[in-house]
Image (cartoon, rainbow, N blue to C red; front, top):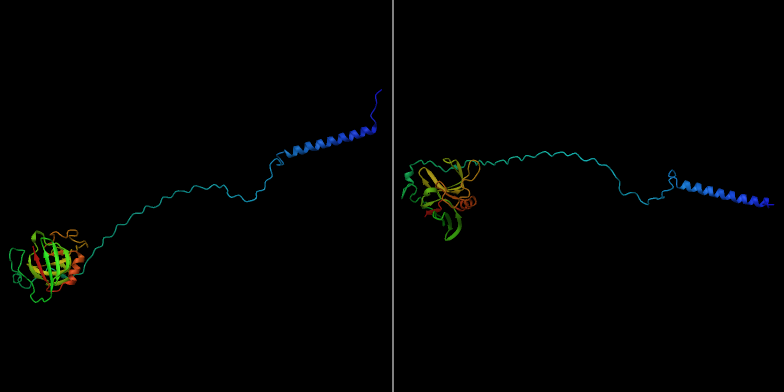
Length: 243
C-alpha cells in the first residue's frame, strides 16, 4: 500500500513549479525581444559628442571653355617729319669760282676761312684717322669719332664755320641734317659738319658706320656729339681738314 502526498505539500510544490515556469517564460521572451532586429536593440547605443566634420557630395565636372586667341597688333612705325629750317644746297647769286679756287683736284679747295674771327676756338678733322679734335686755346675740349666722304670727297684745307642751321635739308638726297655747321662751298652746294642724317621714314642714315668714310662729302658725327659741337662753335671758328 503506497503512501500518498499530503495535500499541503502538493500545493506548495505546484506553486513553486508555476513560478519557475513563469520566470522561464519571461526570460525566453526577454531574450527573444533583445535579439530581434525589428527593435534595433542589438546595436550599441552611441551618442556622438560633436558634429561630423565632413560630408559627401557629388560635384559636376566643369565644362571646358576655350579662351579666345589674342592676336598681337603690329607695332606702329614712328615717322618723324622735321619742319623745314633751311636748305644745305644754297644757290649762289654769284659764280662759285669767286668763292672756290681748286688746289689739287675737283674736290679740294683753297682756304675759305674768315680772317675777322678773333676767338681761340679751333676744329681739326683728320681724314686718315676719321676723327675730330676740338680745341679751345691749347686745351682739347672734345674728341669725336667722325666720318668723312666716300672716295675722298671731303676737301682738305683750312676753312671756317660759315653758318649754323639747326636742321638743314639736303634736297638731292631727301635727307635732313641736324646741327648743321657749313664750312665750305663745293660748286653750288655747301659741305659741312652735321649729325647722322635723318631719312624720310625717321631712320638714321649711316647709323653704325661712324669711323669709316661714308658720307657724300660732309663730316658726320653722332647725334649727341654734333649737338655738343653745334652749341660750342661760333660763326668764324677755324676748321682744318687734313690727311
